[in-house]
Image (cartoon, rainbow, N blue to C red; front, side, top):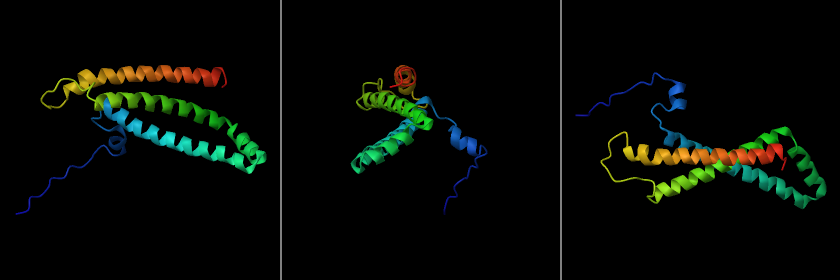
Length: 147
């Protein structure tokens, strides 16, 4: 006899897909880590393209650099600063977790996982504070000093 699988309909619609429902802080950090990684890859591809125009002579280089002076690229530079800062510091947090330094004492795996709440959550908060400080320093350099 084939057992029929019970079906549960989602009544949340798109908000359930976007909001994540029971997602914790760590799950949002995981998703943001993936997004910032793709953003950094996009930045590298654009950077390689604009740098490679130099081989076609100063005229093409100057044409690309004049496009890069558009204010939208200042916003892009700010997003790169935010993405790099978050991705780097969150990567250090993930390395500490993978190496077992931020896992906590072994215990029975019952949800909600206490090791996640008592050990990894404070590490995530510290990581976010450091990230905010780095973004503030980079934003100051970009916006105030104009580098």
